[in-house]
Image 1 (cartoon, helix red, strand yellow):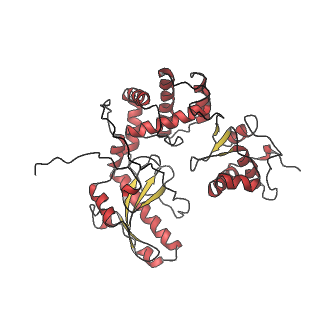
Image 2 (cartoon, one colour; image 1 turned 90 degrees about the horizontal axis):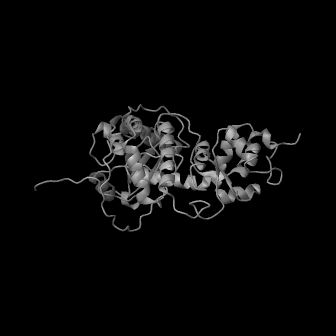
Image 3 (cartoon, one colour; image 1 turned 30 degrees about the vertical axis):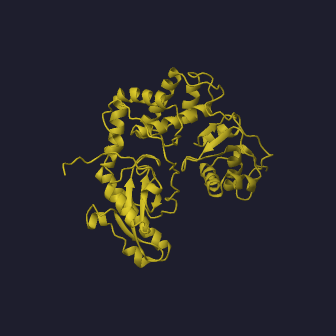
Length: 387
């Protein structure tokens, strides 16, 4: 019996195809299976938030579900809104309609009006509130509902604007929706003003974000860490023009600072890294070194400039500082002057592990050596003294 697109019923098979897409990269994946680049419809990988060509993923997913079939080739079925989109959405995946024009602002090359910005920010905050409350969010349904409130925008334009809002949220010290990775080039003043105005009066959002930042964290039991480590986010480290200071509205809290002060979350993240390091060394066949991994922040106290003592493949010591968040991968973190100086002094042996999405599905990335070689360090507080 010939295989049909409707035979795809396994979400695990779709995820396997998405994972292969991530491993190979877009061009290599498409070449391997003979598909062309998607012109409009992309599917989001829920593990990485990356976007992949939806038709190719559906065809290859069938090969994972029915290994003897070889899946469906590009000429055996049609992609798009009538076929692949409802199928993948029915299996729980988000499908994004990407506009063909190069202009990311949408089909109409017109600046977003204040009314459009207000409606999009309100929609974003409602999704964030649901996400932080542990509720499932159908981003595709939100985008489609928002279209009627906007001036001829496309779904891709809304996707782009939501990513702009994520960048503005981080600048204001607020968490962002994990599915919308921050895009730094945004309609700065209009977005910042609108977010400030809506957040200040949003008592329920304030309560939910504050609870998420302060919530007690528990040590996670995990044996397999094979999919935990990711590449770090790219940062633009070129010299920046100085930003003129402007007063902002007074938020009730600095939510990211509140989370950074959550001792239980910090310790739980450090414990997670200790177990990850022991697992890593065991994978290298270095069981004796794995037994010597030490949680120094617990055994010797804070203030050393690092939290975990581990070892490299050559047996040399590694000094690991751990920063943990329950929010997204690009959430800023705080480092002390002592940690920065220690990283500089021991750059060949120092590394920082950033643990993120801790409460949902913990992942981490590594920043070896001097911290400022990976991140933009901005002064957050100053010590005032009389000596």
